[in-house]
Amino acid sequence: MMKLFSWNVNGVRAATKKGLFQWLEYEAPDVLCIQETKAHVDQLTAEILTDHGYHASWHSGERRGYSGVATFSKKEPLFVQEGLGIDKYDVEGRVLLTEHEDFLLYNIYFPNGQKDETRLKYKLDFYDDLLPIINEQVESGSNVIVAGDWNTAHYPIDLARPKENVKTSGFMPIEREKLDDYVNDGWTDTFRLFNNEPEKYSWWSYRMGARARNVGWRIDYFFVNSDFSDLCKNADIHQDVMGSDHCPVSLELDL
Image (cartoon, rainbow, N blue to C red):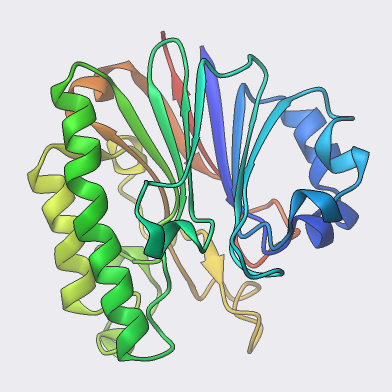
Protein backbone atom coordinates (compact mmCIF):
# COMPACT_ATOMS: atom_id res chain seq x y z
CA MET A 1 0.00 0.00 0.00
CA MET A 2 1.10 3.55 -0.73
CA LYS A 3 -0.34 6.50 1.17
CA LEU A 4 -0.47 10.08 -0.06
CA PHE A 5 -1.59 13.17 1.82
CA SER A 6 -2.48 16.64 0.58
CA TRP A 7 -2.81 19.65 2.87
CA ASN A 8 -3.16 23.38 2.38
CA VAL A 9 -1.06 24.43 5.38
CA ASN A 10 -1.73 28.19 5.07
CA GLY A 11 1.93 29.05 5.58
CA VAL A 12 4.56 26.35 6.07
CA ARG A 13 6.45 28.31 8.70
CA ALA A 14 3.31 28.88 10.76
CA ALA A 15 2.28 25.23 10.33
CA THR A 16 5.72 24.08 11.47
CA LYS A 17 5.22 25.93 14.76
CA LYS A 18 1.86 24.16 15.10
CA GLY A 19 3.35 20.68 14.75
CA LEU A 20 3.42 19.98 11.01
CA PHE A 21 6.57 17.87 11.10
CA GLN A 22 5.60 16.01 14.26
CA TRP A 23 2.41 15.07 12.43
CA LEU A 24 4.44 14.07 9.36
CA GLU A 25 6.65 11.81 11.48
CA TYR A 26 3.58 10.22 13.07
CA GLU A 27 1.68 9.60 9.82
CA ALA A 28 4.80 8.77 7.77
CA PRO A 29 3.08 8.96 4.37
CA ASP A 30 4.91 7.99 1.22
CA VAL A 31 4.14 11.41 -0.25
CA LEU A 32 2.88 14.68 1.21
CA CYS A 33 1.72 17.53 -1.00
CA ILE A 34 1.34 20.90 0.68
CA GLN A 35 -0.14 24.08 -0.74
CA GLU A 36 0.02 27.74 0.21
CA THR A 37 3.54 27.45 1.59
CA LYS A 38 3.88 31.26 1.54
CA ALA A 39 7.67 31.05 1.55
CA HIS A 40 10.78 30.91 -0.59
CA VAL A 41 13.42 28.28 0.10
CA ASP A 42 15.91 30.93 1.25
CA GLN A 43 13.51 31.80 4.09
CA LEU A 44 13.30 28.25 5.45
CA THR A 45 15.16 26.38 8.17
CA ALA A 46 16.71 22.91 8.06
CA GLU A 47 13.73 21.63 10.05
CA ILE A 48 11.54 22.42 7.04
CA LEU A 49 14.02 21.67 4.26
CA THR A 50 15.93 18.53 5.25
CA ASP A 51 15.65 17.29 8.84
CA HIS A 52 12.48 15.28 8.16
CA GLY A 53 14.37 12.91 5.83
CA TYR A 54 12.03 13.34 2.86
CA HIS A 55 13.01 14.45 -0.63
CA ALA A 56 11.44 17.90 -0.82
CA SER A 57 10.60 19.80 -4.00
CA TRP A 58 9.45 23.43 -3.93
CA HIS A 59 7.77 25.83 -6.33
CA SER A 60 7.41 29.37 -5.04
CA GLY A 61 5.87 32.35 -6.77
CA GLU A 62 7.63 35.60 -7.52
CA ARG A 63 5.69 37.38 -4.77
CA ARG A 64 6.97 36.54 -1.30
CA GLY A 65 4.53 35.36 1.33
CA TYR A 66 1.98 34.22 -1.25
CA SER A 67 0.90 30.92 -2.79
CA GLY A 68 3.57 28.23 -3.28
CA VAL A 69 3.56 24.42 -3.22
CA ALA A 70 5.91 21.69 -1.98
CA THR A 71 6.00 17.92 -2.36
CA PHE A 72 7.71 15.63 0.16
CA SER A 73 8.51 12.08 -1.01
CA LYS A 74 10.11 9.15 0.82
CA LYS A 75 11.58 7.96 -2.49
CA GLU A 76 13.23 10.54 -4.70
CA PRO A 77 10.99 11.36 -7.68
CA LEU A 78 12.19 10.26 -11.08
CA PHE A 79 11.51 13.75 -12.43
CA VAL A 80 10.40 17.11 -11.04
CA GLN A 81 8.85 20.00 -12.97
CA GLU A 82 8.02 23.37 -11.48
CA GLY A 83 4.93 24.88 -13.04
CA LEU A 84 2.81 24.06 -16.05
CA GLY A 85 5.00 25.87 -18.53
CA ILE A 86 2.44 28.70 -18.72
CA ASP A 87 3.93 31.94 -17.44
CA LYS A 88 0.78 33.57 -16.11
CA TYR A 89 0.31 30.67 -13.66
CA ASP A 90 3.92 29.76 -13.03
CA VAL A 91 4.82 33.20 -11.66
CA GLU A 92 2.42 32.46 -8.79
CA GLY A 93 4.05 29.14 -7.84
CA ARG A 94 0.96 26.96 -8.10
CA VAL A 95 2.08 23.62 -9.57
CA LEU A 96 4.62 20.88 -8.92
CA LEU A 97 4.74 17.82 -11.16
CA THR A 98 6.64 14.82 -9.78
CA GLU A 99 7.10 11.54 -11.59
CA HIS A 100 6.91 8.39 -9.50
CA GLU A 101 7.31 4.75 -10.47
CA ASP A 102 3.61 4.12 -11.11
CA PHE A 103 2.12 7.58 -11.70
CA LEU A 104 2.57 11.26 -12.35
CA LEU A 105 1.56 13.49 -9.43
CA TYR A 106 0.38 17.06 -9.86
CA ASN A 107 0.42 19.02 -6.60
CA ILE A 108 -1.67 22.12 -7.29
CA TYR A 109 -2.88 25.18 -5.45
CA PHE A 110 -5.75 26.22 -7.71
CA PRO A 111 -6.54 29.94 -7.86
CA ASN A 112 -9.15 31.56 -5.66
CA GLY A 113 -11.72 33.61 -7.55
CA GLN A 114 -13.28 35.61 -4.72
CA LYS A 115 -11.33 38.86 -5.07
CA ASP A 116 -12.88 40.16 -8.30
CA GLU A 117 -13.94 39.26 -11.84
CA THR A 118 -10.35 39.28 -13.07
CA ARG A 119 -9.29 36.64 -10.56
CA LEU A 120 -12.41 34.59 -11.25
CA LYS A 121 -11.52 34.52 -14.94
CA TYR A 122 -7.93 33.61 -14.04
CA LYS A 123 -9.26 30.69 -12.01
CA LEU A 124 -11.57 29.49 -14.78
CA ASP A 125 -8.76 29.80 -17.33
CA PHE A 126 -6.54 27.69 -15.07
CA TYR A 127 -9.12 24.87 -15.04
CA ASP A 128 -9.43 25.10 -18.82
CA ASP A 129 -5.68 25.12 -19.46
CA LEU A 130 -4.83 22.30 -17.05
CA LEU A 131 -7.36 19.78 -18.36
CA PRO A 132 -5.83 19.15 -21.82
CA ILE A 133 -2.37 18.88 -20.27
CA ILE A 134 -3.34 16.08 -17.90
CA ASN A 135 -5.56 14.44 -20.53
CA GLU A 136 -2.55 14.27 -22.84
CA GLN A 137 -0.50 12.60 -20.10
CA VAL A 138 -3.16 9.91 -19.75
CA GLU A 139 -3.48 9.47 -23.50
CA SER A 140 0.29 8.92 -23.66
CA GLY A 141 -0.06 5.99 -21.23
CA SER A 142 0.59 7.55 -17.83
CA ASN A 143 -1.57 7.29 -14.75
CA VAL A 144 -2.09 10.72 -13.23
CA ILE A 145 -3.05 11.98 -9.78
CA VAL A 146 -4.09 15.62 -9.32
CA ALA A 147 -3.88 16.55 -5.64
CA GLY A 148 -4.43 19.82 -3.90
CA ASP A 149 -6.69 22.69 -2.98
CA TRP A 150 -9.11 22.91 -5.92
CA ASN A 151 -10.87 25.92 -4.36
CA THR A 152 -14.31 24.74 -5.53
CA ALA A 153 -16.97 22.69 -3.79
CA HIS A 154 -18.40 20.52 -6.56
CA TYR A 155 -21.85 19.50 -5.30
CA PRO A 156 -24.27 20.75 -2.62
CA ILE A 157 -23.14 17.88 -0.36
CA ASP A 158 -19.66 19.42 -0.40
CA LEU A 159 -20.49 22.47 1.71
CA ALA A 160 -22.62 23.23 4.71
CA ARG A 161 -24.59 26.14 3.24
CA PRO A 162 -25.06 25.56 -0.50
CA LYS A 163 -28.14 27.75 -0.99
CA GLU A 164 -26.48 30.73 0.63
CA ASN A 165 -23.31 30.39 -1.48
CA VAL A 166 -24.51 29.94 -5.06
CA LYS A 167 -23.20 33.43 -5.89
CA THR A 168 -19.98 33.01 -3.90
CA SER A 169 -16.82 32.10 -5.78
CA GLY A 170 -16.03 28.54 -4.81
CA PHE A 171 -19.58 27.33 -5.44
CA MET A 172 -20.73 29.35 -8.44
CA PRO A 173 -22.33 27.28 -11.21
CA ILE A 174 -19.64 28.37 -13.69
CA GLU A 175 -16.92 27.00 -11.40
CA ARG A 176 -18.75 23.76 -10.66
CA GLU A 177 -19.21 23.23 -14.39
CA LYS A 178 -15.43 23.21 -14.76
CA LEU A 179 -15.25 20.26 -12.37
CA ASP A 180 -18.04 18.63 -14.39
CA ASP A 181 -15.73 18.93 -17.40
CA TYR A 182 -13.06 16.95 -15.55
CA VAL A 183 -15.53 14.23 -14.57
CA ASN A 184 -16.89 14.07 -18.12
CA ASP A 185 -13.33 13.59 -19.37
CA GLY A 186 -12.88 10.56 -17.13
CA TRP A 187 -11.46 12.05 -13.93
CA THR A 188 -12.56 10.57 -10.60
CA ASP A 189 -12.94 12.33 -7.25
CA THR A 190 -11.42 9.59 -5.13
CA PHE A 191 -13.08 10.55 -1.83
CA ARG A 192 -16.53 9.89 -3.27
CA LEU A 193 -15.47 6.38 -4.29
CA PHE A 194 -15.52 5.50 -0.60
CA ASN A 195 -17.71 8.03 1.18
CA ASN A 196 -21.04 9.60 0.20
CA GLU A 197 -21.89 11.06 3.59
CA PRO A 198 -22.61 14.77 4.10
CA GLU A 199 -20.74 17.06 6.50
CA LYS A 200 -17.32 15.91 5.34
CA TYR A 201 -15.35 19.11 4.83
CA SER A 202 -11.70 20.10 4.42
CA TRP A 203 -11.83 23.89 4.90
CA TRP A 204 -13.53 26.19 7.40
CA SER A 205 -13.52 29.95 7.73
CA TYR A 206 -11.70 31.32 10.74
CA ARG A 207 -14.77 33.47 11.43
CA MET A 208 -17.83 32.74 13.59
CA GLY A 209 -16.47 29.51 15.07
CA ALA A 210 -17.09 27.78 11.75
CA ARG A 211 -14.83 24.81 12.40
CA ALA A 212 -16.25 24.06 15.84
CA ARG A 213 -19.73 24.09 14.28
CA ASN A 214 -18.49 22.21 11.18
CA VAL A 215 -19.77 24.90 8.82
CA GLY A 216 -17.26 24.02 6.13
CA TRP A 217 -16.49 23.27 2.52
CA ARG A 218 -14.88 20.26 0.84
CA ILE A 219 -12.48 21.85 -1.63
CA ASP A 220 -9.36 19.67 -1.28
CA TYR A 221 -9.28 16.63 -3.56
CA PHE A 222 -7.35 13.77 -5.06
CA PHE A 223 -8.57 13.27 -8.63
CA VAL A 224 -7.26 10.35 -10.71
CA ASN A 225 -7.82 9.17 -14.26
CA SER A 226 -10.62 6.59 -14.34
CA ASP A 227 -8.40 3.62 -15.25
CA PHE A 228 -6.32 4.29 -12.14
CA SER A 229 -9.31 4.36 -9.78
CA ASP A 230 -9.31 0.56 -9.48
CA LEU A 231 -6.00 0.84 -7.61
CA CYS A 232 -7.43 3.34 -5.12
CA LYS A 233 -8.19 1.45 -1.92
CA ASN A 234 -9.24 4.26 0.39
CA ALA A 235 -9.56 8.04 0.57
CA ASP A 236 -10.25 10.10 3.65
CA ILE A 237 -10.55 13.56 5.18
CA HIS A 238 -8.73 14.08 8.48
CA GLN A 239 -10.92 16.68 10.15
CA ASP A 240 -9.33 16.18 13.57
CA VAL A 241 -5.92 17.43 12.40
CA MET A 242 -5.44 21.08 13.33
CA GLY A 243 -2.82 23.63 12.31
CA SER A 244 -4.48 25.36 9.35
CA ASP A 245 -7.91 26.49 8.15
CA HIS A 246 -7.76 23.35 5.97
CA CYS A 247 -7.29 19.78 7.16
CA PRO A 248 -5.34 17.04 5.36
CA VAL A 249 -6.93 14.67 2.86
CA SER A 250 -5.48 11.30 1.95
CA LEU A 251 -5.43 8.61 -0.71
CA GLU A 252 -4.29 5.00 -0.37
CA LEU A 253 -3.15 3.02 -3.41
CA ASP A 254 -2.58 -0.70 -3.86
CA LEU A 255 0.31 -0.81 -6.31
